[in-house]
Length: 327
Image (cartoon, rainbow, N blue to C red; front, side):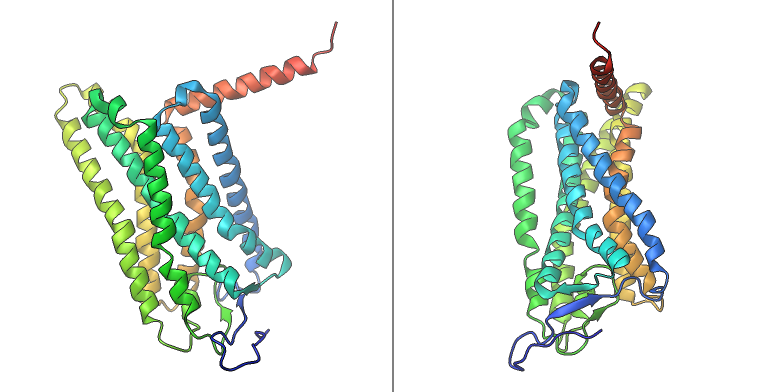
């Protein structure tokens, strides 16, 4: 398969489309991976929709912590939907061709959603910090207005902050190769095909990652350091255990999210002999957190589990009443 080339050699882009080859080294049987990936995608969408429905229908969950969880669910569904339909189309229908504008749009969307997820984790860490360290002031600090402002700020910050990444990628000269050994348009994977110097792209992505997600992670660590210091001062072991239990699910997700970000970045920079590993990690990093986040919160949060049961019991009761024959 070869790219269609634009007629004029003076055109900025000579290659008019890219071809996503899928997982490198396993092209002959990679379609079998579509089934577990499809299950992960469906579980991510269904579980996050369930989270949203439960929080909307249960007044007991109309609290800042669950509002942030709702926002995280929306971001997770956006991140998963940015990549999974195209990946499944590659495996099931051999739809490997992607136009340049679509590819750069996917680069933008992935960076935007990953940045927003990091920002929401920071908001949730701040929420837990105020709830544990300043419980009496919590209702006056973490208000609906603050949640709205924080959400708008995160959307604007990441929506504008990551624009240089796809813009710089679009300015490269793609004059020969157009086959990307990947399932999605990653910035480094796309710019590796450029005929000119791609270092500005790599430097830009590194700087933006350190400024954006690095700042988020630093503030999250600071928040939990202050939380731990406050908890250790409590005289009651039961109170300390209860305070930490409200943070446990959040900490699990944060550790997983940032650990995988670091591993993916290191494997890409190291350029390993087995290119399958960074590609697989990159795909899994964009699909596992959206499916894992609601499961962890459902298992670790007693109030959410109770609300699930309440919502389902009400739904079952309504369905039973409707199905009863009239006397």
